[in-house]
Image 1 (cartoon, helix red, strand yellow):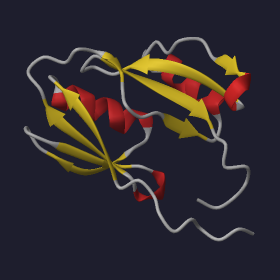
Image 2 (cartoon, rainbow, N blue to C red; image 1 turned 90 degrees about the horizontal axis):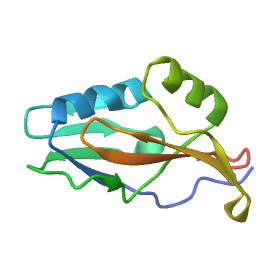
Image 3 (cartoon, rainbow, N blue to C red; image 1 turned 135 degrees about the vertical axis):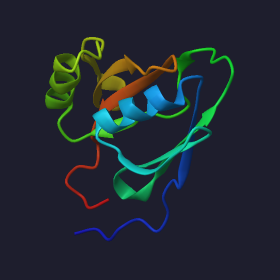
Length: 123
């Protein structure tokens, strides 16, 4: 078994004009709340990466500068659909050996969710 990589992403940032709603959305996705306040929210993802949500008066929307991965993309997509989050259809992306879909969070940013590529290794 390969050993764990020595380095990882510590923090990624999302700006939102609706911090409370964006925070609830991240909880519904399965992130772990670390801190929630009116001026900032922090969530932990697998591997210890933290998502920091900061306020911004007007969010331009569009794709985030990061994407998310899950072990079972189809089950995750189904869960989001049932919860009423209206994810796009799953599409295959052979060039990068993934499947993916997008979903819009309440602050207006679009998150891309990809199938996992860790190939059974510990991360």
